[in-house]
Image 1 (tube, helix red, strand yellow):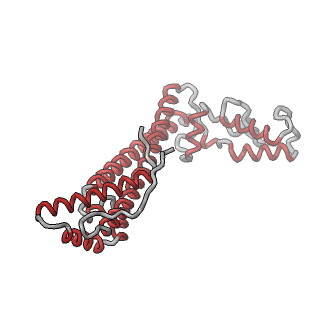
Image 2 (cartoon, rainbow, N blue to C red):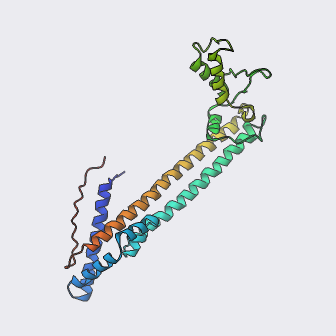
Image 3 (tube, rainbow, N blue to C red):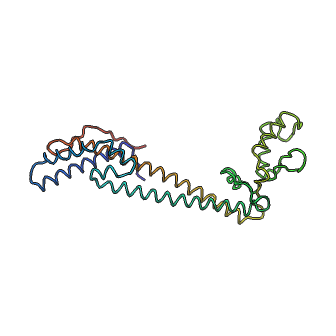
Length: 273
């Protein structure tokens, strides 16, 4: 795939603008049968009438607007790119939202059905955990009394209790006294990060539902990522159109009396990296 640096793109835009100006002057001279000086004066007057700020700002807001004011055919290209980008973004957003609703419904109707299907909706991290762990595990492994953290390492809560022990205990397999600072720090760490009972889940016994959930969450992630990339392209189209309009106005304003375009700026072209 060919890649171009911003300097190369700017040079191409200047070249296109200059070529367009020369073409218009030659065509006018051929039709009138007179020199290009009067036409050049008219074009320069039009360029001065349309300030670089107006053309640039117009294209920044609506790609192609500045080019349309200048009578450039590139207005169609920028406008078409804008419409295509916004249409693609809308489709991608709808697809992402649809699959997000699907995996949330699956989490309630399958994974949380035996616990609290009408419990609160989780944040993004919560549904990511549901994808990585088949079961959350109980928040309190032994009901009654104080909190007894989950010890099953195959569950999410069990993994959090292991991480808490590894973080605060000298030996994660040798518990200190429950009243010690080490134990209480680990317990506070677990309490803050473990999944509470009202958010508990389990995909055990529902392999098909688990696979559907994984497929839906992957599809949603992919759709939202494509939507973000499309937004970047739409923004780039606005910027490129604005730069093009600014360069076009400045070049047309510098046309000399004999109809030629005088380009005083030198833009070095380096190899893209």
